[in-house]
Length: 233
Image 1: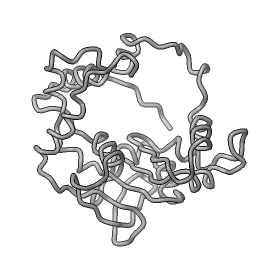
Image 2 (image 1 turned 120 degrees about the horizontal axis):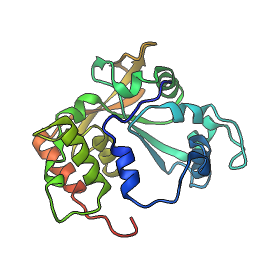
Image 3 (image 1 turned 60 degrees about the vertical axis):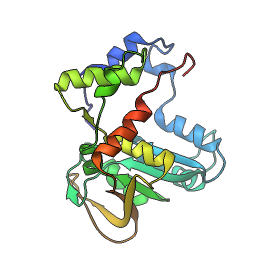
């Protein structure tokens, strides 16, 4: 898969501002190893995985073999440990969503072979829910990576209304549940080789459907982001 550059430079900006001890990638485990280590240490059927990007690492996890952390292969480990997968991906009723088509092969593999429940927050769900302006203009919140990232992004985009809340909707329902924020529907999810996706009648995945007004959802998500990080966070 072709790498994606951060044209807004919020990643390197945050790295330069906030203290950290990791200086190079070789100092930390690969994503699949870390997944397997964490999953193996958790009680059965308790883990909720949230994806807000490409499905590459999860695809590799499903295809991983036994190791020092667990005698189970990746698919069996996920089946034993994971309760739900919540993914910001796809477009209802059909489209070509970024997180899907940038690694269409991995996306197809994950959503075909995932052994447990899958909940989608589609592109259209977060698109109209705008957030960020109250956060970046709140002078009482300082040293917040979330605030800094929004300030960079909104300045880059020149937005006067805020940024779409694609990822936040997935995190919100993963932590707090679908109700009262959204409705849902069970559907089949299909990915083509070019990364286009669509849904049709069936019961393989659960898909979010808008319920509350977008303005109300913006207030809810913005309120959760209006947070002053503590020293140990």
